[in-house]
Image 1 (tube, rainbow, N blue to C red):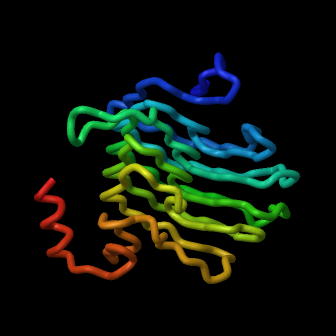
Image 2 (cartoon, rainbow, N blue to C red):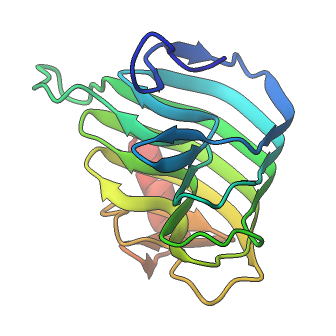
Length: 212
């Protein structure tokens, strides 16, 4: 159980170091219901947490209950941090990094509910949070009734960078898969590099990586 059951909401507040090991053949069908919304993800919500050095393979999210709006963040739905002023620069209260998710399927083709938000990685990233060095490979199948299908939703108040996404869309209408919220950060989708939704050169990416 990766949830903190001592709180009213299901929030993970700890430190999870995968040490390079793999979680395989993981399937999520049952939701965590909060505020009349069905949440699906490896972690529902985290706060002031670190998750790092983890591989996930053969990972399936297949909601079976469409009676409530669905919110999916494959790794975590909401990454929360305490809203305090940090004295040191480039320090974060929440950090997700060095994570790979392969052979990944989000299957929503038979869901009838509306106002769904589907993100292959994370729904929201709060202040004092940093998500980086993440790779995704897999498929999102179906988009019936979905407001948004993407990598990260539009609610980013923290920082996200160096995310490589090879997620294909199956049985989907045309959707905007590179979200506006990745501001001044590089994101790679299907071997194409974007910054502020504009294609950029590989040289620019290498400069950015070397600079960090």
